[in-house]
Image 1 (cartoon, rainbow, N blue to C red):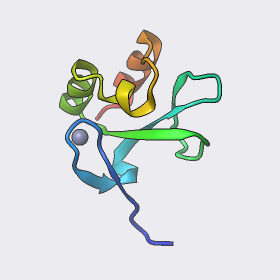
Image 2 (cartoon, rainbow, N blue to C red):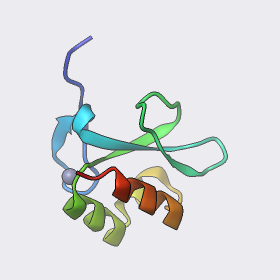
Image 3 (tube, rainbow, N blue to C red):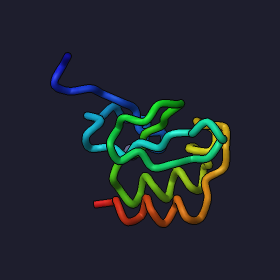
Amino acid sequence: MPKETLRMCVACRQMKDKRSLIRVVRSKDNQMVLDKSHKLNGRGAYICKDKQCFEKCIKSKALNRALKCDITDDLMNEIKKNLE
Ligand SMILES: [Zn+2]
């Protein structure tokens, strides 16, 4: 296992160490959930722990497109709390 696993932020499209990204997963019932453990199964997408990237991905609906489902207000608030 490599020490660094690079994933792409859906907002800025930069490759980063996944530990510095927030992972969002589409669950079996088509809900977007925040995956703090980075261990949930399902289709996942990553964004930087960065306010600008978060706002960009809300505006561009990048997460919605990546996961093919809609982000809820609750999840948006939860992600906001995890931004640095
Ligand atoms: Zn980013």
